[in-house]
Image 1 (cartoon, helix red, strand yellow):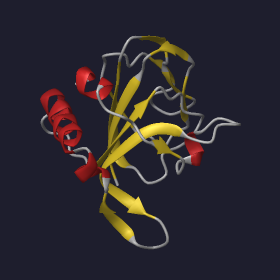
Image 2 (cartoon, rainbow, N blue to C red):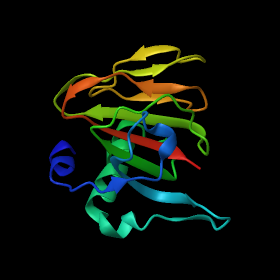
Image 3 (cartoon, rainbow, N blue to C red):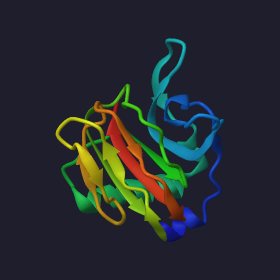
Image 4 (cartoon, rainbow, N blue to C red):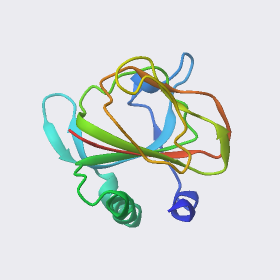
Length: 151
């Protein structure tokens, strides 16, 4: 999975302002699966499903190998992004996250709720509910995260 991530050119994402730190205008990420469309158009399939078919296929297989019973509608892959404090607005139920790459730091921190505290997700799966405020600590190096969720 890591080789595939390294071989992928990540586009700029300027639409998720709630995860950007002050002064940031974008981050690099790919949303796959079903997405919430703005302006009342409801859920639709991400155009990235066709742009990144191999990545979409292997990312789905990756979580299935970890937890075959976990169901999700969507996933986002972030490259070198330390999210600002936020709550996941549209996510329903549990999510999974894993960090990959050659990095130090970058723990996922929950300010409250059942997962309160810092979690090392480097090469480790964490099942969580994103309706509690969370953020990423600073890190050094190459860091990818894959977050699986349902809308």
